[in-house]
Length: 111
Ligand code: AMP
Ligand code: ZN
Image (cartoon, rainbow, N blue to C red; front, side, top):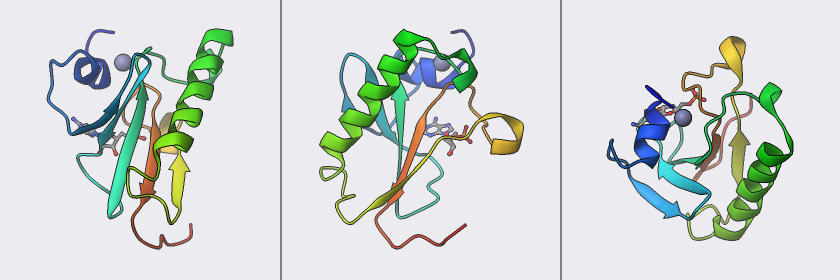
């Protein structure tokens, strides 16, 4: 997708601090961490919103969650972490390529 910063990161056109990659997703460190550890799990398939969900995208998201469950300890999140997916204006979504925030490395405040 043209002009999508995460597609450019996936394509290697923009550098990132990548901590995991396979054929379906990457996990990178967030450039402006909101917690001691802050990662973004980014599917390689471009789509922005849950409203675009079809079987393929649902499979992709399922795979993301399964992968997170497999690698969270390697990311230093063994004591727990927060999973956030921002959606649209009111959700505070700034990058219109669906991604999963993983926050941890410390006790997080409530919201
Ligand atoms: P959201 O606001 O949910 O769309 O999240 C977008 C996130 O991407 C923010 O937390 C940004 O700090 C992060 N971000 C933006 N550009 C980059 C980048 N080049 N590398 C890593 N993280 C980024
Ligand atoms: Zn994209």
